[in-house]
Length: 196
Ligand SMILES: Nc1nc2c(ncn2[C@@H]2O[C@H](COP(=O)(O)OP(=O)(O)OP(=O)(O)O)[C@@H](O)[C@H]2O)c(=O)[nH]1
Ligand SMILES: [Mg+2]
Image 1: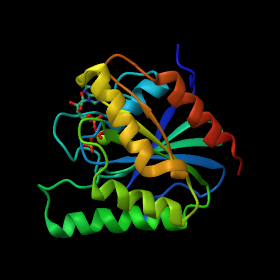
Image 2 (image 1 turned 180 degrees about the vertical axis):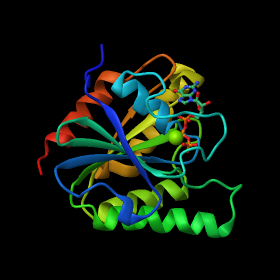
Image 3 (image 1 turned 120 degrees about the vertical axis):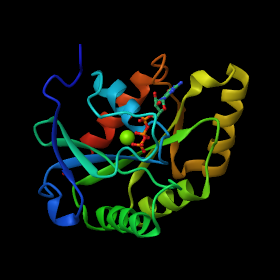
Image 4 (image 1 turned 180 degrees about the horizontal axis):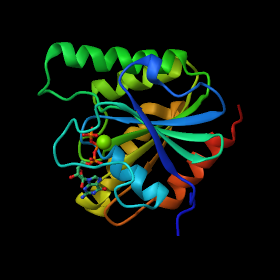
């Protein structure tokens, strides 16, 4: 059973004036295009196709707002670093993302989704820098851990931990075999509890 029986989609925004009112608390999910953001949300909320997943990178092009419970939201952000879009489109996404991070008072934490096989890339580092500028708590899910052998996954985890130190917490995750789901949910709850 879902820990969030009342979870529901609220709206998609393509511009800041379409964001839901900036009250209560919300946690954002960000990551490279196709990293597995929507899949991770579905596991955490424990509902299939709650956030729409796709084999085609760049599927989530809008800022999608979900209500987890009264006064607590989860936000699926457009994936960054997707090559096959026009410059104008990429610029629009980048600006929308930056604006979102700059203005959202209700934003309490960032769950970053990183493909464990790729590790941190410059786009991820830029995202971390943006989040740090607004003093967000950051937790990284190194997802698709099912794609690596245990030893390789452990090495990848250590490498990211070593690079970031106490700037972020990091864990392994898999939407395929649900590895790390409890830990991810605990962090989400902690971020949501950090109050309005
Ligand atoms: N093996 C494996 N595949 C995964 C995992 N998570 C996601 N995938 C696959 O990766 C692809 C992209 O997943 P999405 O969840 O749609 O990724 P996204 O980050 O939301 O993508 P965009 O919204 O397009 O930026 C899909 O084919 C998923 O089935 C995982 O933990 N393990
Ligand atoms: Mg998505």
